[in-house]
Image 1 (cartoon, one colour):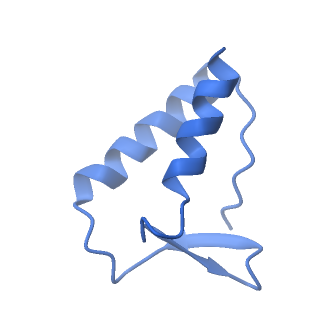
Image 2 (tube, rainbow, N blue to C red):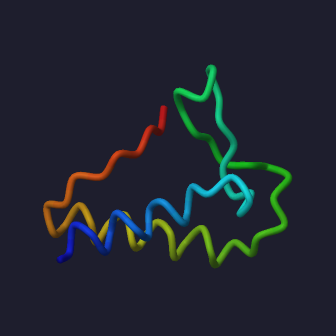
Length: 65
C-alpha cells in the first residue's frame, strides 16, 4: 500500500508538464529547473515526501545525479 502511494506521488512530481525538474544527460538524470515558476514550498514538500519514503524503506525509481 505505501509502496504504491509513494510511487504515484513520485510519478506526479517528475511529470514533465509540472516543470519542476528537467532531464539531463540524455534523460538519464533529473535536475532542478532553475526557470520553474513553482513556489519554493513545493520543492520543500517534495523533499519531505522523499524523506518519508526513505524513512519507510520504500525504494523509488528516482535518478538524481
